[in-house]
Length: 281
Image 1 (tube, rainbow, N blue to C red):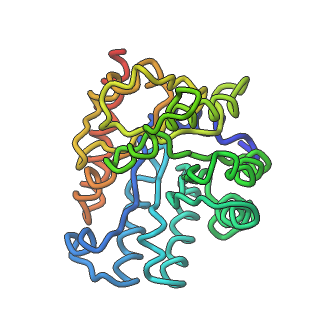
Image 2 (image 1 turned 135 degrees about the horizontal axis):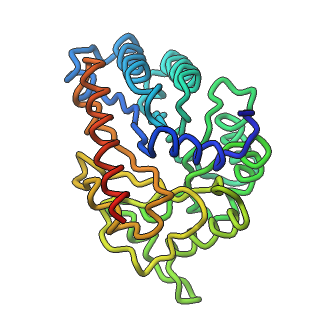
């Protein structure tokens, strides 16, 4: 399949073939220590390579957290570049978790960093923050359409602090989180089999039946595992939109390292639990 096919098309196929699980690559200092690695570039490289080699051939999406690589400067970014390349070569889609958000030429530069086909960090999708106004994301939206990549927009996040912004009620009576979902539904209108512009919706949020989650795009659902949500919670939280979810697990898988077989087994267990939960809907 061409790299220029829309992200939503490529994601739907990956989810159908491999299941929807997204595994994070989050090499924070405490996890490196748990793995018996030093908190340095060598430890970072060993950690990332192990995760990619263990699960990139079996999960739909890998999600590197850019900050944990950036903290090592240019050498950390070099490790991130290699991890992205290796993950995509193994068939996983790469969702870069960078949560970029700005205006004008700065937003364009962020988009080009991760979504331009000639960038060393070229990824299949990028997390973005719309809280300078949804319109501020226009350069990223335009480049995503051009390059066949996607965006995941922070809409209803699982962190407690998010509510003071996302639950704020606008003059039209709709809250900010719902407004972001409506923007994404408009971006994805008419796209088949799935739009390329997704929302981040926390799996820990409980009943979201008052929100219209049917945006014809993917829903990245973090919070499974260490944050307390389970695969069985997903249908209750997301309702019928669970068919388009991308459930995200980081520590629940990563804590089983550095043994590659244990990482694979943990990912397979989550994938099966998710399959069973969705099949029951």
